[in-house]
Length: 98
Image (cartoon, rainbow, N blue to C red; front, side):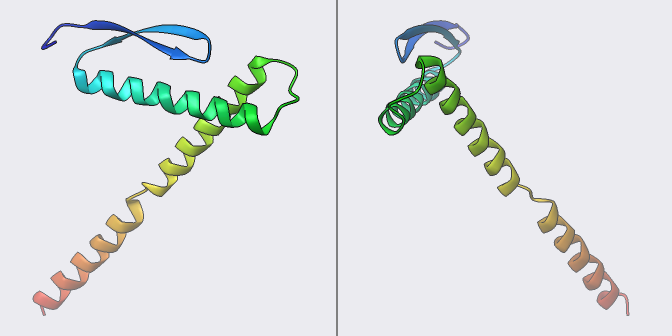
């Protein structure tokens, strides 16, 4: 697939989605993501059996995925670490120059 795009189809619930991928690695990620979404749909359906229609399940999975993404985004904040490193560098520079 080097340089060639490939169209694959992944199944989310009862919908087949065509996806364009650039590599086998990207294909694996897309297929894994589709599998994860399907597992989440199954879990939500099992947990909430009395929702008005299928769209509620999909919305719940989408919301849950976004919450996880935003939570993970906050955990990857490296600014405090770099601030500490900067302070340590300044202290070391001060000690060296004394």
